[in-house]
Amino acid sequence: MRPVRMLVVWCPDWPVVAAEIVDGYPAREAVAVMHANRVLVASPAAREEGVRRGLRKREAQGRCPHLIVIEHDPGRDMRAFEPVLAAVEAIAAGVEALRPGACALAARGPARYHGSEVAAAERIVEQIAQACEVEAQVGIAEGTFAAGLAARAGVVVPDGETPRFLAGLGIAALGRPHLVDLLRRLGIHTLGEFAALPGADVLDRFGFDAALAHRLAGGRDERPFAPRRPPAEIDVTEAYDEPLDRVDAAAFAARALAERLHDRLGSHGLACTRLAIEAVTETGEELVRTWRHDGLLTVNAIADRLRWQLEGWLRTARARHVPPNGPADEAPPASGIVRLRLVPEGVVEHLGLQPGLWGEAGDERDRAHRALTRVQGLLGPDAVLTAVLDGGRADRSRIRLVAWGDERSAQGVEAPWPGRIPGPSPATVYVEPLPADVLDEDGNPVRVSGRLELSGEPKRVRAGAGEPVEVVGWAGPWPVDERWWDETEARRAARFQLLLADGRAFLAVLRNGAWHMEALYD
Image (cartoon, rainbow, N blue to C red; front, top):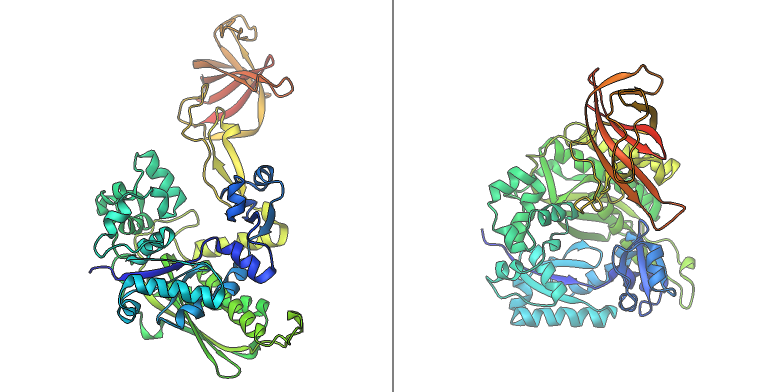
């Protein structure tokens, strides 16, 4: 089936703009919104000073000393975006929020009403500017993914030209860092090159999410396989005796309702791609907002979108009651929400996922994720760490611990590292290297000269407090001369692989005249 022509509205640098609308930060100055100590979005003035997405906070401030740093707040972004959605809805029906700062709708209706797609795009941009005083760009193409990229370029892609438009774009446009890194290492650098691969091979080699990305790269519909109408009983509803009129209460209710919906979808073997949020207030007002996602909405993604939407509705309702010339905190409580309903409008068969670390993908993995996140909430983000294998020469130095939930992308894995030990890697890397003696045939310690000449071949090894064991095979040395320009941190060493008669194999290092066992091979 041919993809539907979609119209996407995109507001550039939205977290910065939202911070100006809600908290009064000057968006025209050098501003950076941070997430996990890295730059998420930088204002145009900050970009002129060299501040880029992904920079660490200290590096960004080094490039721009007068940089205004703001922590990312998705709730603030949604509160500021709600009036923009309302402005678009005033002239077009069927608006779906993609994320704070972007929304989508079918292009056919507005195009027929205004005479053309270009005229419809211009009218929507004008409406947002007049109603919200916010800059927006519109893109139109087949499918939401392609229309979103067109919006960033501010173009209307001619009908049928979407695959050609996408073909020349960089592979990073997929927005999947791990997949993008893998494809680049395989020599695939554009969406067109990725789309040229056989779809069945992509699914078999890279998995379900990559197969969805492959469809997007080819300009096909963003729905993975064939969406179907959900069963009538699959939506979830909750009524509240005490109306929800506070953001913290709404956030708690959002999580519980999201988990119920996710569990119900899972029991039917389904996953959600488009979600409608319906609410009824104390005064009988009915509120509806639809959220669309390029991938599959996890329980966390559902909870986040519901929380953002409820926060936007509550803050918008409260703003209507601010006394004239009075501060916002003197406004009476907003009209509370007495009923919530989540309706999965787009669902797909959720098959083909491989088992993960916590067993089958599903409830067990989600429970583990929630448990670890709760531990972080109680003890701090650094209380739960996971290991990432980076580039480097020694296996001990290649292991980097990152907080659970932070970005786990490896650094420098493919870079050349002179002196790196050839594979396979050891199975066990000791936290504290074991003291050892490596002896030659005469019982003297083996030494290595500056020209990498050995005083004698390794014949026996004593690791720790054990008895000496005969060496039946060895390889090396692999020299390391690190940070030679810094006297306080300079390190010189020579590494060896030693196979002992009892079947053990060690990675040994000679440093400052002393031998240690750094790791054990299986």
